[in-house]
Length: 73
Image 1 (cartoon, one colour):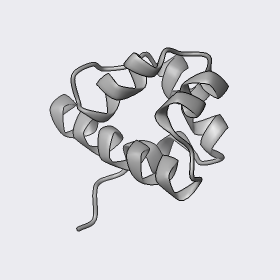
Image 2 (cartoon, rainbow, N blue to C red):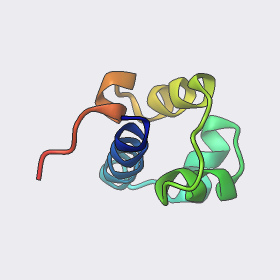
Image 3 (cartoon, helix red, strand yellow):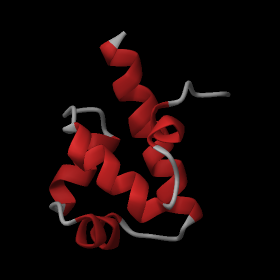
Image 4 (cartoon, helix red, strand yellow):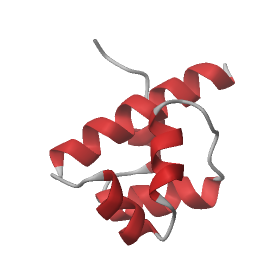
C-alpha cells in the first residue's frame, strides 16, 4: 500500500508540476526544499513527510488528495 501511494505521489507530482510549467528547481524553491529532494520524490526514492507534501500541494494549488490519488491511465 505505501509503495502504491509513493508511486501515485511521484507520478501526480510530476504531472501537476509540468501542468504549471514549473521546473523541479522552481518547485523546490517555492516549497522550500532541495531540488534533489523533489527529484527523489518524483523517482520514488524517498517518502516525503506530510509537511512537505502539504507544502508541495499548496505551491501547486492542488489538494493533498489529488497528489496521492490513484493513477488513472
